[in-house]
Length: 378
Ligand SMILES: *Cc1c(COP(=O)(O)O)cnc(C)c1O
Image (cartoon, rainbow, N blue to C red):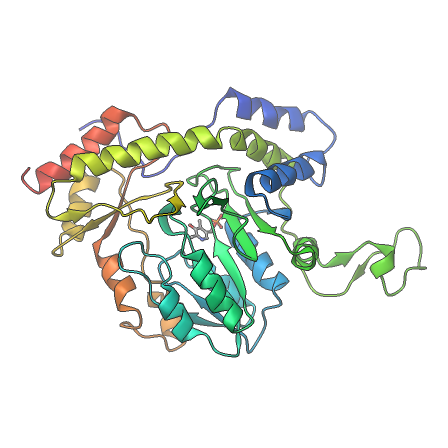
């Protein structure tokens, strides 16, 4: 039976450990130079205007919506095929979350469904790069623009990928990343917001740091004294410490290698399962250079649940990503009903994530393929 295979796992080497211990021996544990360095590294990778490192992908979404000025009475159009944080952070700011259905094959927000969902109250259209595959960002930009809304890209799965030759992080008004342990690169917990708008960047930086205004030219009472700082709008402490930013910069240096290994494994699964009639392997759209975060298999004929149990019993840590967000009781209690987004519900019913991480060996991937094949009698 062998060891338990997780569905995702970090890759940490001596270079990462050295980067962290160097910070621990230095003067700045937080608010120091490793933060600016990590942000500069992210800006280089994404060809974006500015990056704001924060404590999680959830914090990044909260910061991004706050920077967009989301509040009570505003609407945010988003995909139900995502982790709950894409929606809950907007709801916490008082917005009404409007779920639009996904494309049946990629699981990404369907531009036509998003177009039908926007109203004059829509302030943000939030796409999710499901499994790492970029959403239809050009069409979604047009949809968002048609109602004067901003386009947000939840790129928790897709850092390092690109769409029509442009890197993730350069495509939307606001892009958010997660550096949780199972994501494409990790700072244990962490995240970032990237934006090309100087105004959104300033607002994001302020919300991350209690809303504090330190620049005298922006202060209401600049002559108070050298110690003076002011709060003009409420914020939080979402600062990512130097200890973790140093880890992030070290991880970024390996991102291209992580991407190549994830691609190899993804292709190995595709090949090993191509002739299994009971499953569908993931699609790649023209123009997408994908950083594969998940291997999102689809299992037909109601066999997803039994296959999940079978693989788990064999020590293979499969996952389901995701339950449609509005199925969570918190949304049900707000009046959202099952049946709202049929494509997302069908996608969920068939979806199974196979183990995928850079240190997964070919032999381990083959063990997963063999287990799926033998379940269906191949
Ligand atoms: C992981 C994830 C988040 C939240 O990130 P955390 O760092 O875990 O807070 C948000 N959206 C998506 C799509 C994610 O996968």
